[in-house]
Length: 198
Image (cartoon, rainbow, N blue to C red; front, side, top):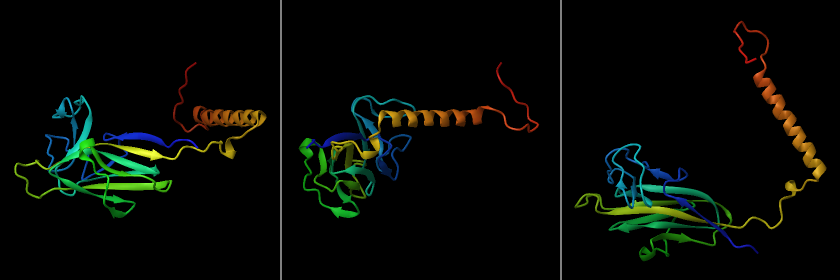
């Protein structure tokens, strides 16, 4: 049997749903929501600035959350906290992460889940009043997704004889040409000028 497949989803991925938003798009304000942060260049202070170093999303807002939807058998959330905590909702149920390991930057790990669609939400818990401001933070780095390997045999629909493949290829090519012929050739005159290159 093949080994499980692992791949990472970086904090900058558009597949991650940050609430209330993924970036304050101005002077960083951790108390208002999530802000991108880079290990070398720090916070971005202007639109269009390219960050340097490892990226994170950071917040100190109580109730801020991130959600990831995936298909697989497990997930690991990486990051760290400073005087903050969080709750995890996995597939609609509140869960306690027994694998929180701050020394290895592991926020949560879930394995041996059914090979199916899942969603996980991490919700930040911080005090409403922080002294100094933004001193209770959560840094999210990335998620590692664990998925079952593909089947050893190709699916039945992928088994074609070479003759059948040529027929399908020729048919698709003909349909492609018909489609573009329809787009490129003028239809009945409409009173509008038609221009073409000689």
